[in-house]
Every structure is written in structure tokens, then in C-alpha cells.
Length: 120
Image (cartoon, rainbow, N blue to C red; front, top):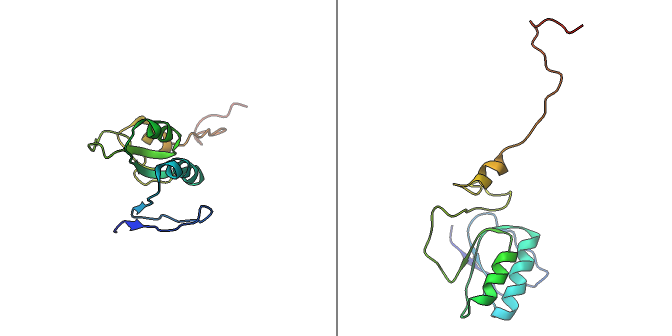
């Protein structure tokens, strides 16, 4: 599936991302706050940020809810966690977080083998 470029999306607008990428281009001053706002509504698998200065994006990247945040197109690292928060089929592969997300703790009480003698 190809990426999409969305133009003139209202700040209050909703954009459902099922599969495939999407790009949103905005001035840096507007983009920093909007990226954080949009990721708090629904976490993303990956967000790529770019700009001339690195320091404003460091702070933005820490606040974004995404499995991976790339700043200024770094070299791909297959060992880095990747995937969305609670909605990705790939989870956060290669890391403990991936296992924890897929495990469910459950207590089962009162089970007794039918052939075992009763405690009565």
C-alpha cells in the first residue's frame, strides 16, 4: 500500500490509519505541538520527524506515543523496538516489551484433579 499525503486536515479532524503510511507536512512551530497532540489520541507505530535543528525534536520525540520515533532519517536499526502501543500485530519485537504486551496474567482458583482425594 502506498503512503498518502494529507493536505489541509483540520486540527479537529480525524484520520483513521489502518495500514499504509501517511505524511503530514507543516511548519516546525506548528508541527511540534500537533505531532504530540495527534499521538496522544491514538498511538502510532512509527513517527518520523525532521527539521534543521535537532534540539526541539528531542523534546517532542520524548512526548510522542509511538513505538519508534525517527529524527532526520537515521540509519535503520532492526534491533530497535518497533511497533505500536497495544495495537500492532508486530508488537515491539525483539524486546521484553513485546512479550509483556502479549502476556496476560490470570489466577485460577479452586481447581482440583478429579482423581485426587477430597480435603474433607
